[in-house]
Length: 81
Image (tube, rainbow, N blue to C red; front, side, top):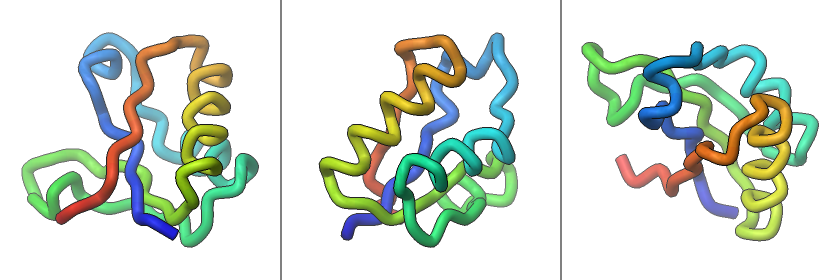
């Protein structure tokens, strides 16, 4: 299992980053230990959704979030902070 987060990429500049909705989607798609964390651990950055998953499950989660939010611009990155 690897720790990932749903990045608040530039798509969210014009659309809300609904962390509760994203968390629910990640949980339903198979994400484990789903939590909110300040991006990079910095207090001046917004909270993002973090979760544990295998590479295969991460791809499934990415597709699920994209489908639910009706965009192809969702970015899921490894959490390395």
